[in-house]
Length: 155
Image 1: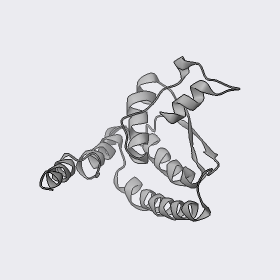
Image 2 (image 1 turned 180 degrees about the vertical axis):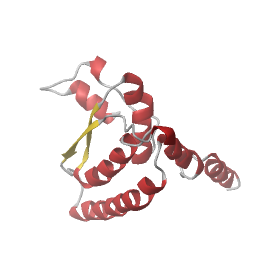
Image 3 (image 1 turned 90 degrees about the vertical axis):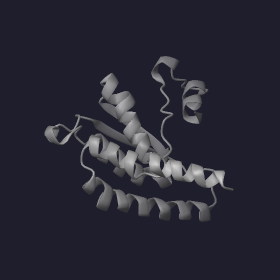
Image 4 (image 1 turned 90 degrees about the horizontal axis):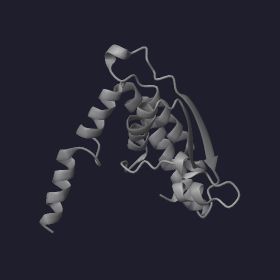
């Protein structure tokens, strides 16, 4: 990915290859947080995490990663939030017009509100989040993927 390439090839501060990992399963921020936790941090035992993203995307990313990384695995483990220390760093919105940045900010704000007021209150455990992804999410629910796939066959 572009981020991994940037870290590996940085002119002044290249990161050694053994410290750079790429999460390639996700299609959006919710699944990025979910698969980062379930495929990397829980497996490797990493408990300090730095999330780096664009300035316009940071608040929604923070809401999503805080939700996913503080969710217990199951309802019987409600007091176990994983012990994660979450850190966030935003990068400047370079290469976008002011109109595009404003549009992204508005979109991100709506998404942040949805996460905080609905998703994080309804899906409380990793198991429930997984069920949300595999049952209702447009990019991961088999029924939605199959429906979209068959719709294209008739075109």
